[in-house]
Length: 174
Ligand SMILES: [Zn+2]
Image (cartoon, rainbow, N blue to C red; front, top):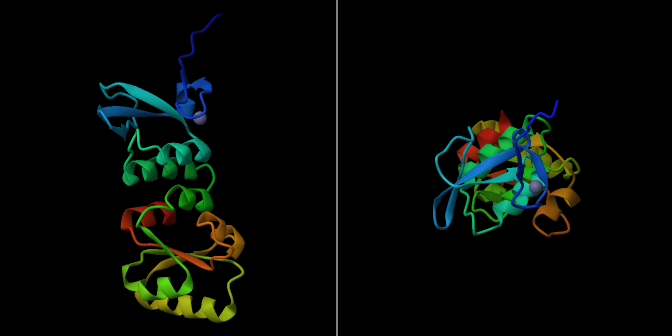
């Protein structure tokens, strides 16, 4: 009756969990880890919970130095359970792939692949953004409010966030 279930410890929160509840990251050099999706890489590995919280925390840790693509791959696997733009954006707020605020977004619109518009943006700005997005064929969504979007960047309010990286945009859109 005593079945052996392989358990591993999350390197972030130190909780012990079944391997299926964890992502594996494999060490490829002293200061570099990569996402080991199949959990089969022949390299020293560490585990991290399949939760927004633990992935967000590991994304900030330079010891692991995970690439934006790897983080995105992990986050998009989570997203299938619950689409949570706020958590995904939070995990990459320090990257050069995001821009925010109506003026910056309009200025850089030609480099933008996805737009997240606050649900309580002013009607004027909403129309302006949507007209431009439609004109250029950029996907957009209304999500969260100005306060929630602002909180990602430690601002009181942010009315729009845009993604400049194609792969990240694709991950958010699907
Ligand atoms: Zn954890």
